[in-house]
Image (tube, rainbow, N blue to C red; front, side, top):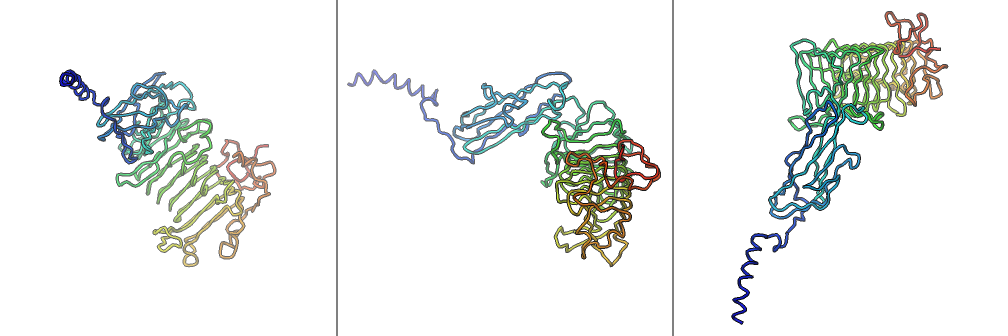
Length: 500
């Protein structure tokens, strides 16, 4: 017996050594099961910083760390877009859009690789300007994600390709910055213009990549914003044949009618000299925001399909001619805290909603409460001529006078040769004298013929429209939004002249 023990001893010793060298084969692997024990990544956004001028591929990677003292098992790793993803994934040598039960030893890491192939000659509907996906990780019920982004077109990315969620200031010493490159412009983040005139010539195509960002103080804001500061100016110089188009950067079929894809264009407080002519602004949260005491002239422009107002103005000055505002989640046009507004041959149309097409007030609430405990007021002077304010609501105009009889000069409005739709607005306690300031006007209802087909967003005049010959000639406005001549004696109301 003693000899057998001596005989076995070397093998036991070898086994001990083997266990020390190959610990995982001799010691039971302990896995973390706590769902609060997460993974750590070498980046939160994997960016493919190549802008392709021809078809090509690029590969990038990041590392996944297990900072814990036990093994961790990732139950599932997958691409959010799955089979539709532009990206191809390889997890620690295993290729595919999904990986299951991936293990990482204690205090260790693995690589995860991604490849993207881009052909900038493909149409934008096939190769978007900004290609995004999300790689998701599920560990013990805990989900984590890393953003993947690449650029699918050869375009001008502004402020730059890495500015999502950031605010960037551009100045040019009071000169002009002309966007005359034939390649499209893609706004990525928040672009602030100051001490500079931004000029968009005819035919400029602007695509805005929306999203959400946070200020340095941590406050949230809507990404995808063009902000013109006090000493900046915006000049949009489109033509009927080549309008300037500003829209979201997703052009696939399913995104065509989706509102709220990007933030807004904002003309900052006290800024002046803005001129917008033949522009088409669509699919934003707000199309155009004209801030306190700013001044703008808007002509021959369409702003539509917004999740909030197409045009919002705060105590500002706006001249608008031959403009179409339609399909808004809030009012087509909103005036807050007074201002001076002159609209001629404009169409405001909000269908499929109970929200008014036009809302105008001469006050705002500093405390944001209703009823208002801290109101502040400013004079409102508003004139609509030869215009149509219509929609599916029984009342398409909302008027709110916060001063009342204390000072009638704080709430002045006129509608001349206009088509409107009002009902309860005329009730006692509302504005029963409305038609004293809307003269001559025609008041329609649900059965009144106005547009060809609002359900298809066709706001040309129906052959039996009550807007035909409703207008009165206005000097220097001789054509409609389509470039058709207006009748010199009895023009139609709205942005379109009826052509028989």
